[in-house]
Length: 461
Ligand code: 9PG
Image (tube, rainbow, N blue to C red; front, side, top):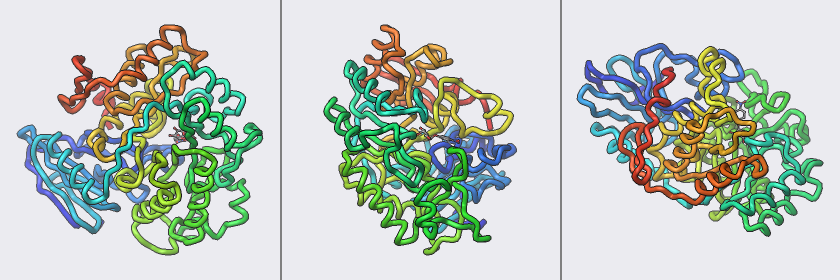
């Protein structure tokens, strides 16, 4: 690894702040010198970290790292540009990647705030709060249809939502971004119905992904990213077969992306949840070689240009630092789910990027320092007991996390909620407690203290 910056550590240095590469990658304070464990299962490995660092022996993170000092302060080393990595050995914080660095030592929140400020000056800052979001994923998953969504739209009238976001399941395939047969009247008509109900139409897309089964795969195969052997780079396998990715440095890929985004915005969608964005920063043979995150950022700028300044762009599964200044919001943790912790996956298979409420809380809190630069989306809160295994206390933590992040989203079907649950949800959507961070995992919400410490430290990695 080429070293371009380093910071010497005291003998009594403590935990290391590991910043996960993209939205779902585990983030927080971990043992500096303890073993580095990455997932056992191949498909999980793909989403665990920057693939270039999967076999690193040292604990490391994307763009920024920090260590606790013996005197209770921290030392931070953070990049002011994309394509950087910070790891720790027993005596130093080590930074790799060309470009400017920020280094500081002091009280933890002060130092992170200073770094965020410097990063904002370098990469830009966008804050355009979008209001409360209803998202179709965590109730219907892929099983959406216009009939089902129309019913939800009707039932949601009683609640204070601002955005109605259709998630994965509407498209013919990844790459063929046209309405499938479950949306017979088309996505434009769906957007009009959402708007006439008083909500802002939102749509999920994974703009860089191309399924093998798609028409675009056959038609524009030259746009796909290949590896050193000339084989197509697999970016995901969640849709019943390999999903490939664009070489986003190609002019034809960029034109295709711009047209896609322009088209969905023209159909009335002004909130786009753009997912699996790490796919534009994988290793491969790019036509215009450059840093992988630089390539991702340039493609993101193409998307921003096509979408226009007023379209809210939420990045998901996205390289985090490289998204700052381009996207309005970013998912800052893995998916929540109706269960707290899937021990088989998180512990036995070493996968901390998979769905589960506990890891979503931990990683999201680890990214709280980004909140002044970009909206931070901790994923949805749950109010239903139907089809949900979370205890009331666990649901409470998710709701409090949403307040802390000032990003309130939900996927519950109104008809699944009891009267009390519906009232709790409405209260949640309308509350705007004043947030004050009092410790690494502690926050004051108005006069109430919420302590996430037990969650964030429960399962070291
Ligand atoms: C839609 C979903 C939702 C969700 C996103 C993202 O590793 N995996 O297999 C994996 C699958 C799905 C996933 C993340 C990881 O979720 O975060 O909100 O939009 O896609 O497919």
